Structure formats: structure tokens, C-alpha cells
Amino acid sequence: MSETRGMETAPKDKTILLDAGLPWLVIGIWNVPSEMWVYADLRVDLYEGKWADSYFENEHEKSPIGWLPMPDVQEVKFKQFADELITIALQGCDADGGSIQDLAVALGLLKEVTATEKCGEACACAEVSGFPTQCFRKAY
Image (cartoon, rainbow, N blue to C red):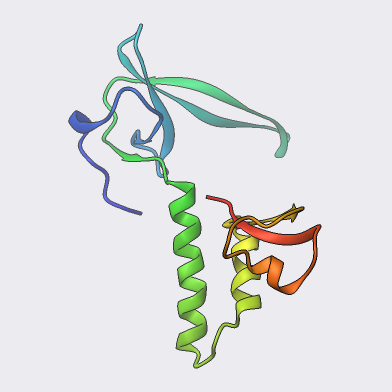
């Protein structure tokens, strides 16, 4: 886990990850009326040693220990994409265009669309098939 930042730098206008002194980070937000941080704590009830119920309970925290920004999902996807390609290279292999395309689709970086006409002067789909055709576009 990354080292948390000091609470004096925490943004009060967005959802963040809070270190509330628990063994894990929680999602928190600044509550303007109460002037304190609020986070949802997962509670699990047991009855006779078996799971009976689970629910979220809001907790108000006057003095969390630290914070981190919420992860950027798009950034995580690109890092995962790069990691997969680097792993292929480190194994002494090559990634062909189809493999790269499949990985990008699986991570949501490319989306498949039905094209009914050329998307521009350099439309690769127009060179290999007629329309309508399935082609891939950036999803970011």
C-alpha cells in the first residue's frame, strides 16, 4: 500500500481513500454540515457462528490519519496493458497485432463498433473489407 498523505492536504470536494486507523483504507468524503469526514463501514453480523446479515454503517471520523486519491481507472487499465506487453517481451516472445487488440478490448481500451462508412482518409477497415464492417475504436 502507498504511504498516505497528511490530512491537511486532503481535498474536501471529492471522494478519497481514508486511513481511519483500520487495517484497511475506506472510501470517505467530507461532510460539510458536521465538518468531519464520513465513511461507510461494512458490518457483518453472525448468528450461531454463521453469517446472518451484512450492511454498511456510516461512521463520522474527526481525525483520520491520512488519505490517498481514488485510483484512476483509466490509468490502472493502461498500466495493466503495459505490464502484460512487457511480460510478453521479458519471456522472449512477441505480441502480434491480434494479441494486442484482444488485450486492449479485454481491458476496455478498445471497443468494437459497426462502421457503415469510412471513418476518415486513413481508414484501415476500408482497405480490408466492405461496409458495413466491424472495426475497433479507442474507448478513451
